[in-house]
Image (spheres, rainbow, N blue to C red):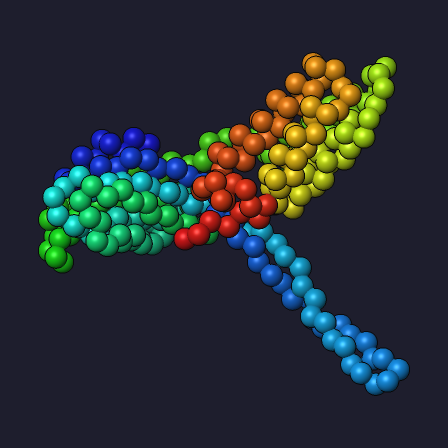
Length: 244
């Protein structure tokens, strides 16, 4: 979505990026404990974690005017039956020449978000209202990161059958890839583990062609993860939770 066509007086929109908002949730499994022979009671609370995923957007803009302003962006939520609700994002005191970003998420992953209007205020007085009336872009299709890791595991395992001496790095590569795949199925994306895997490839006993293929698969994995992320910090976190 090209936001430069908005032509909002005094505000330059620079980017809009859809991404996944991923939040780790803790679920209690109750208490367990034991009693020692001396009569002491030890209790422990059990829990497990899950990753909740919702669709989200990142919008960048800059004040190219001469006075500090407040920016009100209004949106509407639609499903296949029509309009559900409206909401707004307010950014206060954006100073002249200052760039900024705003983020928001929507729980319903199938909902469509209409960018209605942009209102500019200075000293609580309305300076301008610009109609947008465009739906926010959805995240483009891409391979599941866990599927890429699965291909890596299969290829790295098949490479072990090549008639060549094997070292520890060569043998452990498919196990690393399977671990990454399993984490992906559980909505985890262990980018650090993938980077560690790629660092082992040059030390493997595989041929240059096989090593290059594994490296390319790893880079494809990182690319598809990055496309769905909010920031570098978000990208590097296994259960990526952006700061809102």
